[in-house]
Image (cartoon, rainbow, N blue to C red; front, side):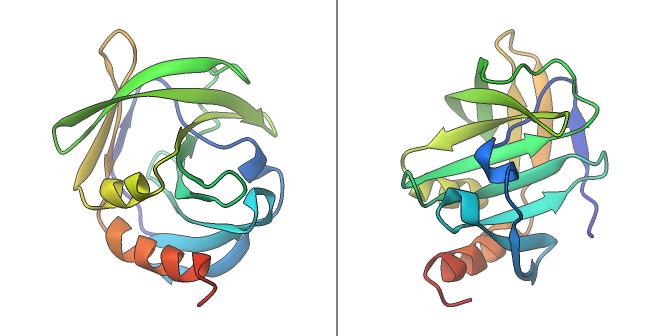
Length: 163
């Protein structure tokens, strides 16, 4: 799988339920796996693994009609399940405040940010980088978003049952 540069010092994001069932493979596009998650009402997502073995997911929760951004990594131990973490992230310099929800799945820590405006997932993909900051304003990670727009096109096709 295509490696990506990834800087990290703090945390990650993931939907607890998204990890509880097996994902269904729907293909591979621009360095991202296209998948369907039965635990989220067969919501479709894109997933990739970065150089530091962080797993990143961007997708749709069809049960609650929302989007989400998820990252998790075995090396991150400070995340507490169910704990809320206020974060700030930037998309090519535009700043947004959000709350990440912590979890551990099979002892792998991570967290998820949910978006009630599902179109915001697409907005993320239209940018080149995403940088996440902790409440103290320290950079947590920076993600290269190359290929996300095309991969999300396929995820939308999956969501519309074309894949």
